[in-house]
Length: 327
Image 1 (cartoon, rainbow, N blue to C red):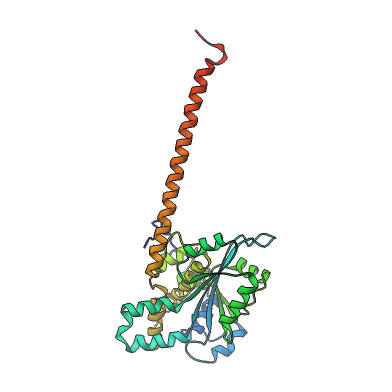
Image 2 (cartoon, rainbow, N blue to C red):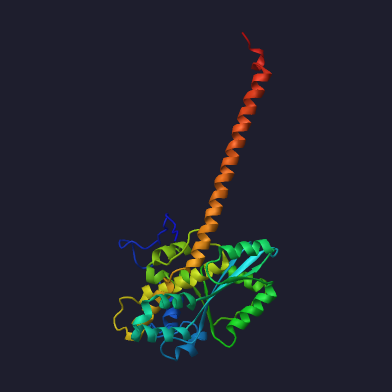
């Protein structure tokens, strides 16, 4: 698998710097702890009224984590002629089964276990654009499939996926994405919205909000360097990053139960599960073709420049000395 050689590092605080502003405990971090049953009595309050009902139950809350990512020129006054809406869903009901297996079943590390972890995150890439645009998106997609839909159909599809469930929306600095959802009238109505950049600030002691690629590199989450800016890929990467934020936030804490330790092992396994092998191979083929085309284009341009220089020299010889300065 190709991993970017230029690994961006997270802007983590230096121990010698003042800590007052570096240890901000944001409500996103508190909410993530409560939703996964990892609060460990570190917070005795619920920061958002919409989560109070959920917080009355112990352990993992019965919710869907729904990560979104939108690709396209969505900040222009006019709606874009083509865009992608990627979503990735984690149903916490599936975590209980995996926790039990993690505690009691020695098979959780075999190939079947890896395949199951890969499938826990249900990823979709909805595309509104020309057939060529959507085909290109599908070729770059590492998780799930691309579906050609207009905005109204996307909304209906999402409503069917989340029907009857409480939803926690997950974004990576997604303020513009949320605005665009409103513009195209897609209503998710989450109980809470988690921004990974904010949720990570305290656990990782961040000085500024990092890129998605920085998260993946630091968290040792598998990724392919040219796979970004495809809706489904980035949504999947965002959800994996959120899981690793929860792991780092709770690792090393005293008083973790066996179930909580198992949960951390499970969500770490999900976050770091391999990209499906067939998608990796397809991506490598596509990237190889792209590189060959780039090299051919470079050769073509070099040949054109050489021809232009040759023509210029020929014209100069035919025109004779400049300004009549001959011997």
